[in-house]
Image (cartoon, rainbow, N blue to C red; front, side, top):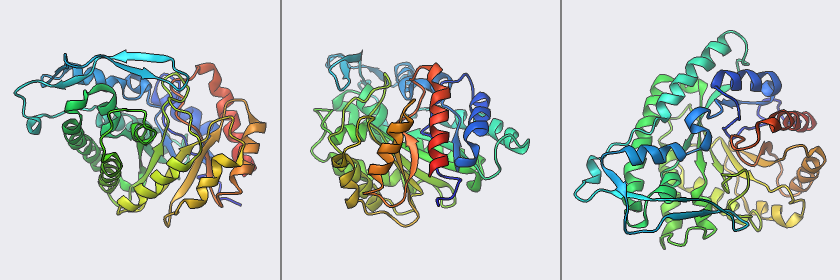
Length: 348
């Protein structure tokens, strides 16, 4: 039987008002099954990286690119989620001198103080790590930066992310910390969602994800969450099967020198067919890496069991999760999501 702690993984966002509410709710309902706990990405982070767009619009080195039309953000069924004016570096700006304040370190350190206080008081199990979820440069780059400026932007934003990461790991003991890299636009690039992806997109993605992973010090837990996006709680692309996700997991592992503690991939609700899971046979599981399958869905205990049963034919050992974070879901669904996770964990 699987060890109790670590049966469940939470992606990050939770539809509650603040980190203390999140920590108390998760600890009381799922605490024994978690090895790490996110702060819920409340406030300005509730729409994932959307607040980074405002940071870019306010930055003195950036401007809206007048040479490109607004970018249409389209989900799987053709609905336009939103149209976004993209930015570029202002003419004459040297990108090497540009510094972005992402805000991720400040948010993490504020939540860490709450986490530490609650854990010291016994409200959070002692074994649980504090989970910090960070985007990659491609997240804001593909969404908010125009094509001609994008590759340069990736380098500038990677530098900013590593600065934020350094501030986080300097303040939080390694044994208490878990870093999750959110990998979404990269998955969409593999699916040809972005028609202006570069010819070398695969090498670009794997090299970048390897650098980010290796920037996390040994002793700090580190993993990757692969995602198809959920701006309206629905995928931007409906995957044909798990083949692209498996290719990416293998590529990330090959590019990362340090240990990867966990990998998470999504499973759409309707996929109880073997075809979706069959590519998992090609996954080259690195030593010490736990796979989490995001196959738990709201108010669908029977479906969860069916998906678990099919997945077991193709993966020997895995933990459970939802497809993505819950920050964009209807808050009234939270009790059902927590209950479904608890029921599934009890059944492992």
